[in-house]
Image (tube, rainbow, N blue to C red; front, side):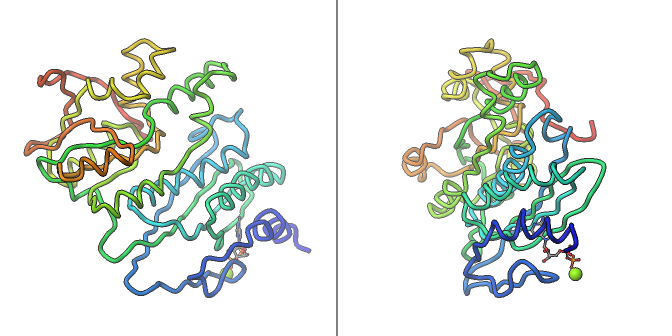
Amino acid sequence: MNQEFDAITHLFQARTPFRHPTTTLGNGDDASVHHIPENMEVVISTDTAVEGVHWPKDMSLGIAGSRAINAALSDLAAMGATPAWVWLAISAKDKPSLSQMSRGIVQACVTHHIELAGGDTVNAVVNSITVTVGGLVPKGAAMRRNAAIPGDKVWILGDLGLSAAGLQQWLQNKPSGRFISHFQTITPLYKQGIALREMGIQSCIDISDGLLQDLNHISQASQVGIDIDIHLIQKLDSYQNLTSELNAENALKMMLGGGEDYALCCTAPDTKHHLLTKLGAKHIGCCNKGSGVQLVQHGTMMDYNIKGYDHFD
Ligand code: ADP
Ligand code: MG
């Protein structure tokens, strides 16, 4: 048998037998075919992870594989979609690399009960994983970046800064550092995303490039100003956790600009306060009629020089 197809069959197709009920033609043809249930919409997102850019070269390729799937699923979480399918475009330096990446990829697909509906496999000079994910939402209910309104409060679900602190420990050669697992393991919060959408939240984003940078997307898309209260940030569990090892300034830098948190940040009117609190969301700021994202302390604006991740900077 052709070695490429043999690898695709054994490493991927045979190990991901799950078929989503909407799939009329699954993996193995030129493309997959899916039926869209009545009153539902399809939500699709794609994400690339490259060795040496998105994960350190000395990290396990299995972990890189599961991170790639989980990071892509986080985009569905931000939209409030229920994950259904994954398509995978993978470049591998050699067969062992392919095999190792496949392990994490397959494990994540099985864990989240999503269908690996197709893909492409190539040999290249660098290992990289491009994941396209698709999910379903009731018509018109997808959460978006352009739906925040002045007066909304800003809420966060999930950890901030722990992943960035973990990456720093890895790069500093502290393999047993307490935050490393937070960098290696991404937990896509799609159950929480669905819960937010079901409670009527309309504006949400997942934090991948740093809280303040990603909030700028909501600010611009919705044409609102956003104030983030430093005292509310310091009340979060992540702050307590980080300051057990880092000084206060570094802890805040990690939380506000570190990135790869895959936390969900939404905005909502006060009427949702009780439901959001019950879900475990924490209030960190408010939207106003201004523009841009401000960090405030005791009601006054603070200067900050925290930049999120920029691939072309
Ligand atoms: P084509 O040449 O028509 O693009 P390929 O020969 O590249 O198709 O792939 C054969 C089949 O295997 C296709 O159905 C494709 O979706 C699937 N496939 C290829 N690579 C992967 C992968 N890494 N994971 C899952 N499915 C894959
Ligand atoms: Mg084809």
